[in-house]
Length: 423
Ligand code: DGY
Image (cartoon, rainbow, N blue to C red; front, side):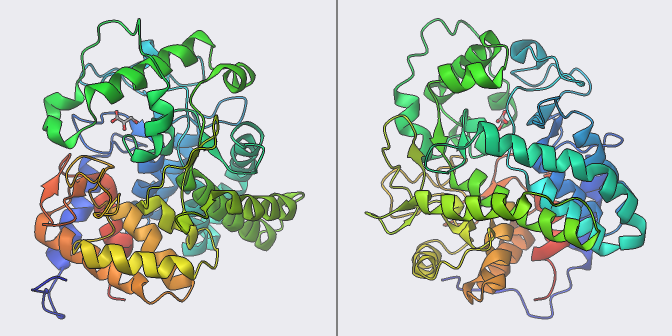
């Protein structure tokens, strides 16, 4: 447990101003970069959090963020994980490596559709301002949700990812089994740029990167065609991040669609199917939500921060509360991306240990909504760690030490929208 706490009446107004300055500093005109240098483009779920952050002080700008994201939507309905609006040599792999042909140069994979949920929050914040903008986005949002159901759902009803970057939890242990099956022969020479911005000990290994790039080359060779990818991609892992965030997105979209008198045909059935599909992610041996390799059914046996998104998805999962209690006892500074008692835990290496503000927000909010008292504890710890160590990408969950990129958009947004607010 933490030994010191910030005074209950601590004045956070300077941090609010700093958080707003990060958002406006990372604004590139209609879209926001996660952080300058390391991530110089528009990333899908980062952008959704940016929108929520802007919504705390500039709702017009918040809508624009999501509209810009949807300007890159593919004909299929997919919304890419990166939109390369302007060339930037500081990032690899850039648009030429992906070789995509959507309306805006982009990557060929997607990311968790948290933007759908957050669009409904912008609407709720000012229905008069938002109704027309929401209605214009609504068919596009439904199309993206339906694309997931068609192209990213396995026979057990779980949503899977075709690349670790699609989940957003790049080097989580969830992918280890499927990554081991890839022989990245022929990937060729490439130069990483991420380790020129951030210490290599906080980033994925070369072993991981060879396979990330190999998978991109494979997708490009298949022309990012969904049907061919479904046949020929060796990486398919059922993922609680994607499943739970999509479930929440569909739930929010359905409720807002009904309230706005928009077409909700089929949504109740889609929701029921996704709710039933969540059962496929329950690892009975470990007694928690987990990921599995669709190729062989092998579980990751990993208690990750994605396991705790069950409440955000609107599920009642009383068994998960004791797991949350165990990881919070083991890690004082927020929900770790991997339980510290797992031998694969690595406190500073990206998604193999660090705590992330935006995951904490979805876990904490979801838990509180479902009546799990620890949700508020997650918020308080997230507030402490950000207040003490800054608006960085992620934190060592054992010491709170800052890690990854600095002046980070989603950490600032999470401060403004959730962590920095009094409960
Ligand atoms: C990266 O480049 O590290 C990203 O996570 C890919 O989305």
